Amino acid sequence: MATSDFVLGGLASVGATFFTNPIEVIKTRIQLQGELAARGTYVEPYKGIANAFYTVAKNDGLLGLQKGLSPALYFQFIINSFRLSIYSEAMERGWMHNQQGEVSYGLGLMWGAIGGVVGSYCSSPFFLIKTQLQSQAAKQIAVGFQHSHTSMSDALRQIYNKNGIAGLWRGSVAALPRAALGSGAQIATFGKTKAMLVHYDLVTQPTFNSFTAGLIAGSIMSVAITPPDVITTRLYNQGVDAEGRGLLYRGWVDCFVKILRSEGVYGMYKGFWANYLRIAPHSTLVLLFFDELIALRNKYGPK
Image 1 (cartoon, helix red, strand yellow):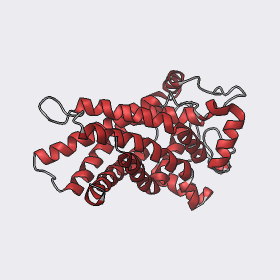
Image 2 (cartoon, one colour; image 1 turned 60 degrees about the vertical axis):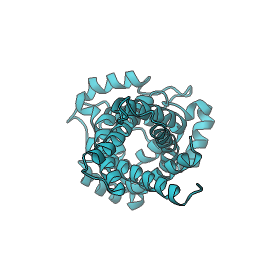
Image 3 (tube, one colour; image 1 turned 90 degrees about the vertical axis):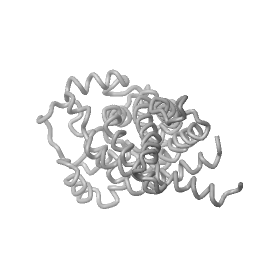
Image 4 (cartoon, helix red, strand yellow; image 1 turned 180 degrees about the vertical axis):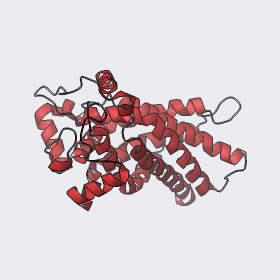
């Protein structure tokens, strides 16, 4: 695996995160409001995406829309370094191609899932802290458990002092289905769509080809990832006792069952449109930036 691919994958995601972090804050708040409460029985401080932007800016200030940016950058750099470098390596070595030499959607799902799982586990502490910082809000619009972190470094210190290394990786295994489904769907769709657009002479210019394939991949990814994303957000944000056990959920399955029982299928898709508006442009930008950085490396890098 080329070291440059690893670094370029991370850099591509960092560039995209600056633009998409505000909608990630909105998505997190919407997913947490009405936690384990039946629809229509709780106060909704965030009534849709536009209202949520206004509410956060009014009560938390404009900088409130960039809460959790630092851990989000670390998380995106690490997970996408693994995801995109594994994807690039698999594509270059022909591991994503079938016996006819065509890009295989099934193999793309597999390699995308592998990259997502590895990257998700390694970056889990930053996803944990990102979620907890993004949920922090002024009292009148607070949803979910409110942690007392003042910064990323303070969160790392608090969690480590209370629950050790294990506390920093709390929920990491439960987050793997989210990573496998989302990454598998995105990578498989991106690789297959790029090849089809060229094969049928629809979009052959490299930059527009990457942009179009990235947009389609992001759309597919948002549908696949929302339910496990809701579960991951709930697990990471819940409070813990002195032994590091969750106060609301014992794990992925317990969280899934409790959401379905209390909130129904609607609860599993809370924040879908916010998720879509984050993932579609983020996926497009990450995959576009990655392809462009690879092209620059190939053009100007050592031969």
